[in-house]
Image (cartoon, rainbow, N blue to C red; front, side, top):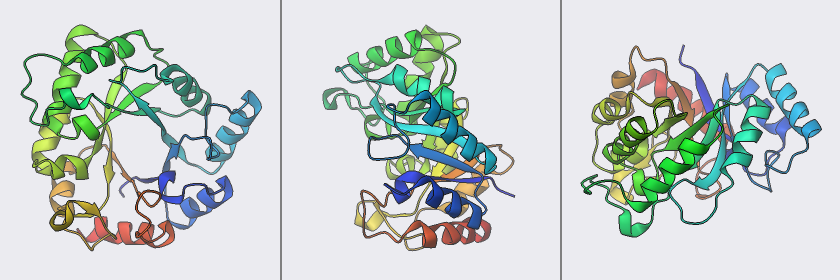
Length: 262
């Protein structure tokens, strides 16, 4: 049986009780916890609050795949990476989700730049000096949505910082939106993938997220490419940013049907 998780982005502002109930009723094994001051997960939690949160999630039989931060690893500005890594370690999470967030001037989706951008060098420095208790999870997103661009960054990290703790969250809809088939993106990213995010989107509407089954994301191709691999699937349901989407109460059962019949 596929291991399925979901991101609390899909129920932003909901209580922990609500999240645990959603997981229980929908055969969910893992969570991506959105880290923000308006959520029950954030870097301002006290040690006691962190212990309580961890215990409740563990007692529910769930694994925390990631603390989903809004750290931009390539950004010029200071980023609260270490605070989020500490939070993830305290919660027993696998790691912290970060965005690449490279400067638009260095954004080359085709991955054809001559050498690393200044932002990628900043990312290298941050990864090299970060604590290694938990992983830094680079999501295929924004400047590095294409698998080939993310693979180039990860290869730089491997070459310049051996033993680093960075891995990749493969947002499969983003790589697809940049012209890569699931098989092509998997071949590019395989050495670094930790888990795979899924959602449906409509390529005729600029890859706008849509209800599960209403778009044309090639879920069958993705599942075929992933056959025999150990990766979790996680529904990144962007309801907070796209309020036209149905609630997770509807999206999670639809996702199970999507991945079992796709």
